[in-house]
Image 1 (cartoon, one colour):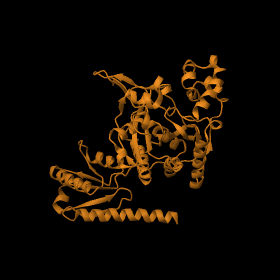
Image 2 (image 1 turned 90 degrees about the vertical axis):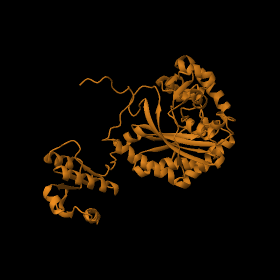
Image 3 (image 1 turned 120 degrees about the horizontal axis):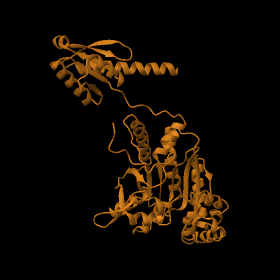
Image 4 (image 1 turned 135 degrees about the horizontal axis):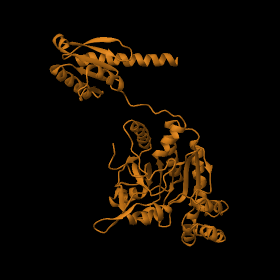
Amino acid sequence: MKLITNRVYGAEDILPADVYRWQFIEDIMRKQAQSYGFREIRTPVFEHTELFNRSVGDTTDIVQKEMYTFDTKGGDSISLKPEGTAGAARAMLEHGIYNDGYPIKAYYFTACYRYEKKNYGRQREFHQFGMEVFGAASPFADAEVMCAANSVFQRLGVRDITLEINSIGCPECRPKYTAALKEYFSAHEEDLCDTCRSRLQRNPMRILDCKSPVCSEIAKNAPNVLDYICDDCSRHFEEVKSCLDAAGLGYKVEPTIVRGLDYYTRTVFEFVAPDIGTVCGGGRYDGLVEELGGQHTPSLGFGMGMERLLLMLKNQNIEIPEPPSCDLYVIGLGDKAKLKAFSIIEGVRNASLTAEGDIVGRTLKAQMKYANKVKARFSMVIGDSELENGRAILKNMETGSQTSVSLGDSFFSEFFAAYVEDDNTKLLTQLDNIN
């Protein structure tokens, strides 16, 4: 069979056989976000290009090389979102959410798009879980956001992940560091890539984030940002570390972290895993809201890559529970029996259990095979004799035990009694194994 087209390079399909893994992780993320007082926000997948030019920064790789940007029929420049923070900040301002009082805590799941080379754990369409806090200047907020991200890893049983933190200063102290970087990189200007040479005068900190092996090697001996931050930034950073110590969250100070977005100030951090690299990254962006037209609003947050997180779980052999199997598969033989089976199936579904029956015209034998395929806990066959007697045999597909149940008004109570007994038996078996 020849398809007229395949999926776009750099984008992946999430198939029904795999989507339960995503749903399991997303459920944990939602619960953890809610436990920290965050509420969900959903923003469009595309925004006016100016939003990202102003927030992410026109000297970053993202804006210069990686954004999907196009003109609409009306002549507007639109870009697919390369990250989630800018859209959340724009929505907070546009809808006046700040009138509800600070802090504003929002979390989201979003697809992001960056035109870059597809490689291990990195796609052109990728997905992020993000948490953002608007209106909080306290170092306790920095530590809380990092603890929130770490709580997801803890709930998933992740091992061998390191929190790396740094401070990149503020607009008051950064000019001194920028001057030191210009002086250092100017001595290596001829060896820098074309992009970094253009950054040398405008934003030399971006050179520290360059993926070129040559530029990365040169950057290893660049001045240390922690030697240039002001007393206020230094004090804030020390207080952040004290908060992390109080929470028992281990960390490593890594002066080379600058993050790839221009809106960051002061605290920046990454959760790094072996063989995967950065799984989660974020920090403070105290000037972003003001840059977008709002009042000065100290803010911070993070983005966690879903694809990379799933890879990390796979590498660490962390099992994600499969979704619940079919609770009851009902087979109807004959027109009247099929209608009765259909009625029972809908009744079980209305009780928030899962039930299935044949909708493609399978034979009895094929239906029994299908019941095994969907891992049905119980099965039941309804034919002429069952309709006449008003009773049918409910079979436990795991143990093979059988129970006669009414097809009348008492069916559901009898089925649920067998279901609960089966559930309790499994629980007792598990307890026996533990003991």
